[in-house]
Amino acid sequence: MTQIEPIRLAELTTLQTGAAPARMVEAMTADDLVAALRDVWASGDEWFVLGGGSNLFAGDAPFDGTVVRIRTNGIEELPSPHPGRIRLRAQAGHDWDALVAYAVERGYAGIEAMSGIPGTVGAAPVQNVGAYGQEIQETLVEVELLDEHSGEVVTTPAADLGLGFRTSVLKHHYGSVAERRAVILSVTLDLAVTGDAGRVVRGEQLRRALGLTNDDPVPLAWVRERILSTRAAKGMLFDPADPDTHGAGSFFQNAIVPESVARTLPPECPRWPVTPDLDTITVIPLDAYYGLVPKPEAPPSDVKVSAAWLIEHAGIRKGFRLPRSRAGVSTKHALALTNRGGATAGEIAELARFIQSRVHSEFGLLLQPEPVLVDVEL
Image (cartoon, rainbow, N blue to C red):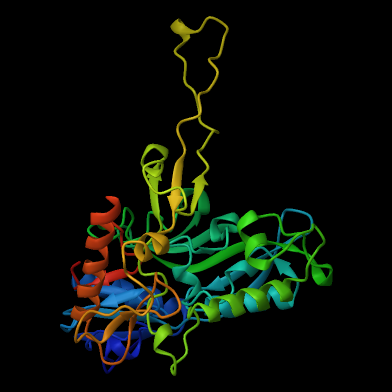
């Protein structure tokens, strides 16, 4: 652990906002990270951890606390108990896309559709990252955590993380605190070994993105190349020379609504069913059991609707800006709010609130921000 001269958060985040915090420490190893966090927790100081800075929206005032920069690195290959599979354990500070590239290069399948997602490995399970129908929860085995309550390092299976659509028990949602206060030290994934043979793509959303019309196996490298090209066309790959990429990716989450609400939206609004959990446990008291188990009734499924469509059809077009503002909607993707050059957090927040109000007025839905907000109000 090394205490360093605080760096402006605008220099460490892709949204490019935020002053230098009061204190900043840097952890290059897992042991450094554990020691740094234990010291901060013992001091009672306000704190947050910073990885790649791609999912953080920091306010203009200096953060009066300690920022812990996670700089840990490394990938370890482990045997899988399942035939034809392998496990990768990556340190929390490892670049996520570098992990995807590592897996694709070696013919390990399961995360190739998440190519180009910015940020670090440790941040991926926190918000259950995903793209084109593929999510980390499909391959996540376990995470190594440092628990704030106990101060102990524990290995937690994926099933205990409460993974859902862009959420987990570790995520700090806007307006609330995380259910479990802990920091990820490492992540273990279980991937299929396909080698050069490639893989048959099954997911409808991914097949559509790739333009596939048959069930022939396709090389993982080809999938990765197509996904990176698609993300680049939408301004979702950070480029210092392109203001369209100076954002936090999708600023708003796609809305998850009941079927009854989805039916009130225009039929052309893109939507995808959220599969309900049918593997539920039915408990029948012995004194009420007569030899028959009632047939389980499937609860009404929720529906995911496109936030980008809602934004555009509320009158907010790509490239939109408020008067005299240096914040704007990306010219390539309506879901990305961007810093067009020197924008303050206040300007970006003003734009976000305007978009929320327009969508709410038009469709009755309040879009929720996806990034973690530090000293910012919407």
